[in-house]
Length: 525
Ligand code: KIV
Ligand code: ZN
Image (cartoon, rainbow, N blue to C red):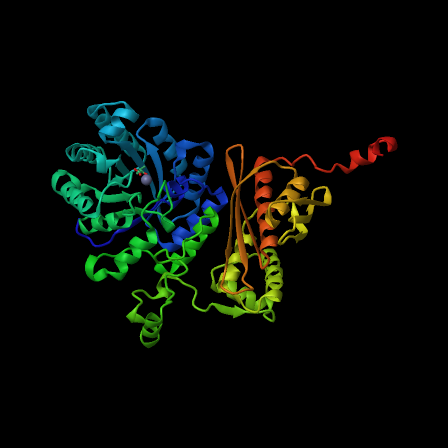
């Protein structure tokens, strides 16, 4: 296969979401699927339908929503999983079933407890079965890089004969190295009799930090599909990062001679959306999309950049969609300018959302001279959480300092009206969260708390993310404010609101005013 187009198979919604703590809601998944369609991914792996009824429904909704990319559902090599995948994909404009089965001796012996012949028959039979439902079938010999290559060749031949049109070579545990993996792909092209009938794909994990290098070595050796995730999220150390493989092929076209169908100007937005929905912050030095990726700090570099950007910049930041102007709005900016700026940034809000976010913008602009695109993105995060405000922060006051006992007084508007309470804690945030716990009365454990400043400067907006856990489920909350204590309280209430909305039950009121009033006078003294 000598064509020079490499397909981008995005598995952010399947392998990416499988990573610990990366769970997204169905609405977020649909939103992200739409953004991936704008980005121009060729194949969108929407999920693993057999894993739960909720997952099946979310794959179905994505299949009904996006029309351009192939929508793919993952399945074990067994009839039930294949039927569920097909049930979810039926309405897709371009459906694909992706079947996987382990082929390494380690997996066959310890996990499948089957011998090589049994596994080969299972693979062939199930691919043939799926082919009757769907013409586009992908097969993955899981843990291929720790499998006997001769066995992998035989198995690929059998599955291509049975109807697989893409064969994907997973480095499931991130074990291989670029040179070795490139050779493996070359050998597959040499030794698999019918390989011309299928596209070779690769799927690399990042346990040794080599996922991108291994994927690129594979395309150099003839693979023509890369499976990857936005920001490299995924199981354990993650998968090959989409933005890195795409920009490497584009920036070094002279070396690779390959192209993709990705609209690279959508990379930044897609990356921020994934970070927002998963709560996984992007490290500042992350290639392509980290905050420092196009920042030049040393004197010599700054001097070079001022003379000619190409001295120290190999990519144009705008080619990956970095927002051009960073300073735009201030407290005198009107609703129209605010709306226009958001539209330029890709946010199309309803009138109600616009009014709410404009009010929030005005509050920030009162405290901050310049409201940057990054501040606006942070505000949008809060606006788009789509979590009903069952409990809303009305007021917070903290007192803390050296030799002080941190104390917080919090007022929250909830279903029973406004309730105020106070608590002490190890610090102001701890005290605030304890006061909120007394009011909201939903026991949950705080698993993660992070605060980030959205821009530099003493008046920067604080962006707080919290994760709380109840009955094995994680709930993500976001809060944004120039005051980090306010942002922290908002983020915690946002997570609690999500938990309450998800469980469908309101907590027992901490303060039952009716019962207080009915206590006999004597008993109250
Ligand atoms: O890593 C892996 O092997 C996988 C397969 C399901 C392709 O994710
Ligand atoms: Zn994987």
